[in-house]
Length: 317
Image (cartoon, rainbow, N blue to C red; front, side, top):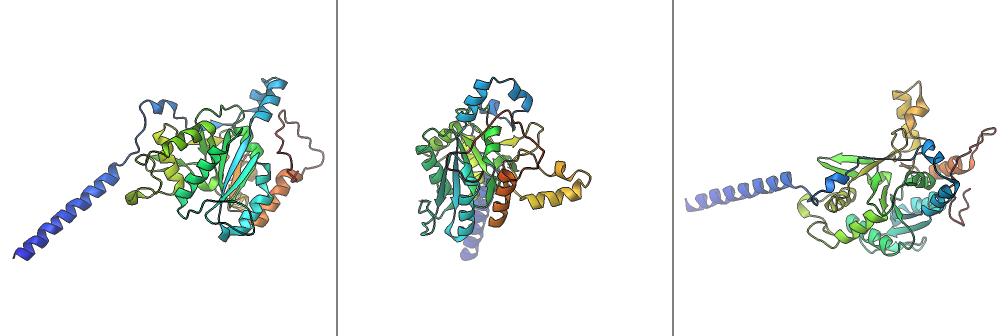
């Protein structure tokens, strides 16, 4: 009888503990500093051409030289072919491109972080990018399967102050948490990265290994840590409100548009000023480089008021 009673009490205690854990998980909310909601913007739009016409020639020249992007590209030796494709294509247009890996490769050069955990590795990469920022004020975080058009990214942030905390891309929602999807690319201003690196030191708010009971993917964990500092996810859009960061490749987006917008496929597909696409094969990345930087229809002249030149040494133009 005593044995049965002990088992019963033990079961009651275990059940109560389980309910407590569920309650804690359900009530978990990242702490935010008082008053930070006042700075919560949901959308960041690229300037319209009308806005640019109001700027003087000297202002335009200053802006075109001022916006410099550091690309933080996360790669893995097991995906060497994508790593090589990123090196030979879009990353050449970053003002600074650094590849970060979990282990070194004899074939390609990268910063070996010697870290298997995805979130811990991303933290170390962002800290390294911040410590070596020099004159870089915008940081673009991408996976090896992402294809980016850096000039369009520069256009998006052209009139934004990088010392303000911007965290933008393709915003998704998980419960009450809004975060920028990793597979579409993540943009951080210097101001946001500075706050992030500071909160890295607080293991209660931003643990390096994540909380065991509610381990999050690295893009969600990043959003949680930034939210503690008053920085919220913002959706990058063109002047017409169309999203600029895509988690799919062009083929998929066009196929979807053909089904949903058969009378206006191109308009329904994606923005003319798109910044990223994802899920391209290495061969498709090379084709995209040709289409974006080389192919020009005869008889059509493009007179953009602003010129955003790639860094010296880029041989893709």
